[in-house]
Amino acid sequence: MARVLGSASDTDATLRYMREALKMAKQALEADETPVGCVMVHQGRIIGRGMNDTNRSLNGTRHAEFQAIDQVLKTRPPSVFRDTSLYVTVEPCIMCASALRQLNIQSVFFGCANERFGGTGGVLSIHSDPDIDRPFAAHGGWLREEAIMLLRQFYVQENQKAPDPRVKKSRELKTEILPVTPNAAIRGPMV
Ligand SMILES: [Zn+2]
Image 1 (cartoon, rainbow, N blue to C red):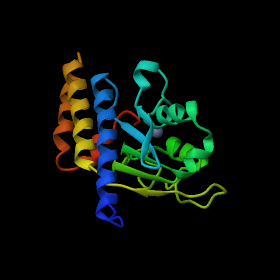
Image 2: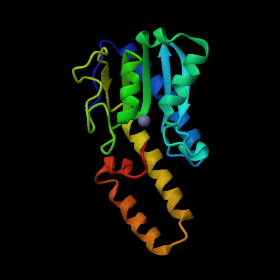
Image 3: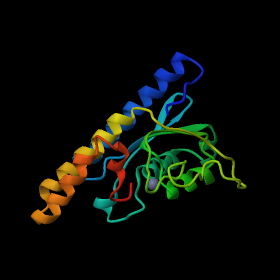
Image 4: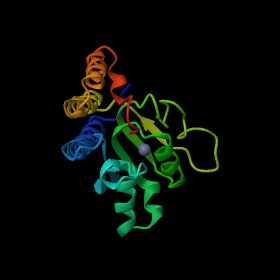
């Protein structure tokens, strides 16, 4: 699914930024959040970082993308998004894809698809549907396996905490299916 870009240096840069996004996802995992992380890149510079923060904040809208958007807007005007790309470990959900389009984001690179809530092709195609806002390009499959592995680690971690053995058993079964259908890793809490 990874799109081949114009040159090897484009690919190298994309992978470099995706690795930075994965670092944020690892921080989320360490904080017991669903491991999704992202960076915003403008003219070759990372200008915002975000990780999923819904559990700590008790706010279901605190997705990694919104964290990064807030960070960018602390020091820059909204017009900066026109020339900014987002690199995120999991496909943006419908809510985030809509926000990104309203902000006029240039493009989005993501790791694994979000089959349950994806807004850039996973479920809906918010990025490209006819609308008054400029569409944005979305490229999936970048370091996809690493992104899925983090999600898998998260569900295993959650299983170990589950006090009810019956629930635990069913969750274990779910993780065992993952190698066959890796995208099932993101079925669960909204990411
Ligand atoms: Zn989202």
